[in-house]
Amino acid sequence: MSEKLAPEKRHSFFHGSQKVFEWDQTLEEVNVYITLPPNVPTKLFYCKIQSKHVEVGIKGNPPYLNHDLSCPVKTDSSFWTLESICETYWGLMDNVIKLCGQFIKKSKDDTLHITLQKREKGHTWSSPIVGEGQLDPYSTDLEQKRLMLQRFQEEASNCAFFQLF
Image 1 (tube, one colour):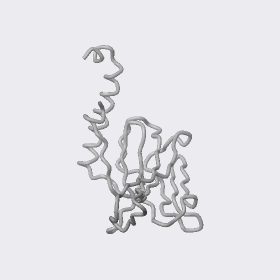
Image 2 (cartoon, one colour; image 1 turned 60 degrees about the horizontal axis):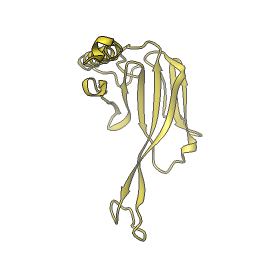
Image 3 (cartoon, rainbow, N blue to C red; image 1 turned 45 degrees about the horizontal axis):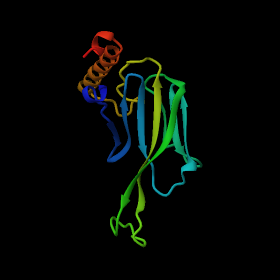
Image 4 (spheres, rainbow, N blue to C red; image 1 turned 180 degrees about the vertical axis):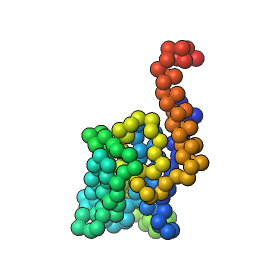
């Protein structure tokens, strides 16, 4: 129910015209999404999460991100994953070749997803990274109201009175 009334909104941080990352937050966590470059083996990506710092990169290269976090996180419950969005094509579409009438899957928009567990539940972050991609005051206010609504929905769902309806 909270997804309908208080949906999370992804925010994008650009450096020039290059999208560096997208992010969103809930009461308990901040999620950072980084689109991965093509043709790099997944085993070469790394992510180090510390209480107040994050580093992301490809082994053997300078880090892509190497910044302090806006707020401290719980390192024991923060983690990262590699996600792949696969689309299925039939025939000759978008440079995908049909082989013997078989479906061919094309991996698109592989993403490194970092889940940062907030040390302070309910605290509104204006950005995951210090000095990078800060929300403007209006957007921060909207985000804070959305999180307050999410907290109310969470607490109301635990209240026996609201469970009657």
